[in-house]
Length: 355
Ligand code: UD1
Ligand code: UDP
Image (cartoon, rainbow, N blue to C red; front, side):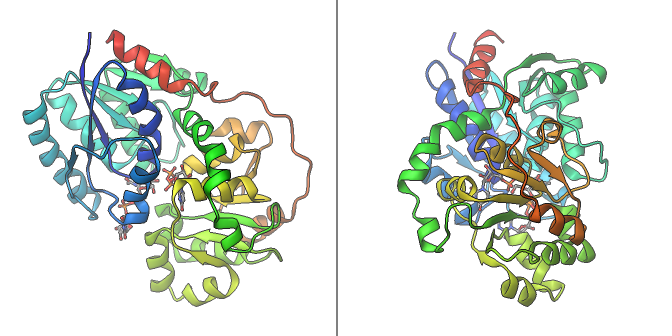
């Protein structure tokens, strides 16, 4: 039976995750996309709707930036009105942002069936806002869609009340869909004069790195240690933090800092890089999908399988460890199939058909 679904997104990685899922859902259901407005800069938001085959959101709640409480509360108030107007059968939330948590709380309080995509991930670091969002959402969800068997085990060990399904990672579907097109249409490597395998790509945006001057400074110094260009598409939060801490000039002198790029350009940059250094959750596994070795600028990761198989190295924010990891020249290890077969969105749709 066709269902009315409300899919809540708000931050860059959620637009990417929603695109294969929304495509699969629209074959049999009404999928009403709600953008909370958490990300609003054109290069963090509009660009993804223009590039990817997803409809413009039916609603943009325009919530914008604020404290965690402000942002989450404002989203809840606005989402409540959307639920009044739409009376959906199901609400879908993605990942671990404040948009995820706001959607989860509103759905739970209104007894709307709540589906959490990317359930069961844990870093074990209770100081991360994302960890609060994931734990709360998983315990509120009626249906938990986990990317891995490890995530399924985590959910079982926490005795979450909802039903659990393993689907694989919808980001793998997204990458497979755009990989070829990215290489055909993106001119970013030519524009930046980058040779294949002749540069390092970097992204930094986590609160734990940007709101700590010594970590941020150490990361920049570590990245600056290599002789090849280091391309850093900069998140606005990181740009602001570098400026506030007097590190902006150093970063501009040592690195190739560019505005955030669209998904096609990012995939092209990631595929062509020798290595990627990142604190992003999405980029760690996209690197794996695109055969690029990853260095993770955090003390722990939710995506431990990439570490276990040798495609990812945790280096924290220590400049020496970053420099050492960037200098590595090991052959690529074998690649197991870690996160599904690229058909996770179909599995999500099958589960939604049956709830
Ligand atoms: C958020 C998520 C994080 C996710 C990331 C993806 C939370 C708690 N964090 O982090 O899990 O990995 O998105 O990129 O939900 N800003 C702009 N323009 C924008 C958006 C933000 O300038 O379009 C600036 C504002 O100064 C804002 C800051 O970036 O205060 C942080 O934005 P916010 O959405 O709160 O968190 P992110 O760091 O983007
Ligand atoms: N990304 C992008 N342009 C950029 C940086 C990242 O399109 O300049 C994409 C990247 O391919 C990945 C997603 O954004 O799919 C990751 O988002 P981010 O690192 O902001 O969030 P996280 O995954 O850590 O939640």
